[in-house]
Image 1: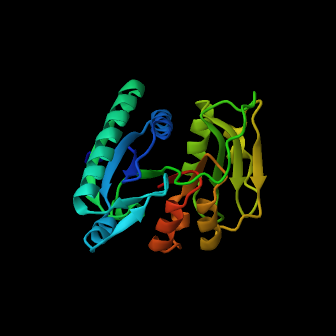
Image 2: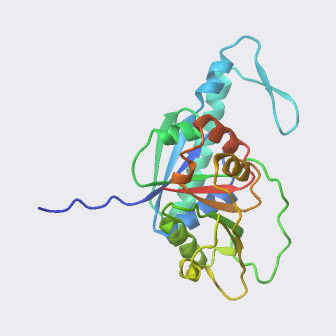
Image 3: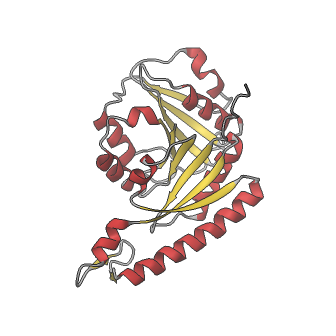
Length: 256
């Protein structure tokens, strides 16, 4: 009996009305290339905003410019189309340059809720919504497009994929310094592939992986990229996690 081939692993990136800038998309594509992943762009139409748009006399205050913008359904649809077209163009250009397989799908809903509906070999990439810290000035020992990477290693949960992902990004030269967050010191051999001359690996061994701590970490992440095993998020209610990701201070890669 022939064994069924394992489907290729993919990084899913939800794309909503906020859009994603070119620098972040390039980071995503380069990560995918060095992890031997494809990229799935999930073009989202936010049902919540559409419902608000149907209310009479509704408007929103934009974050940039502090002026009101109509939330009429046709305006939202136009914005959705513009963001989708621009993001497709950028991702197609970057994926072709870096030889990464790229597909797109349309969906409706909020980012995390929509991801929860999907099965398969999917890692999930969320761009930063807000920046809570300023990037450090150039440091000769901190090369790579991810100057500072954090990774959570929960106790009593399999973390091999997270560690292997971090190791691959380090080997590719994409990462500067690394911060390992856990409730107890990891075994030295687990972190062996993370060490490189001129780069620091720092351990925080008093990190509690409870729902409140993880939510706060996502919201105010000091890292350019935070690696999280998906299993450690199971205890966080979807609405709470959705809100945390909407306020995220850094890029988040959830490893399935």
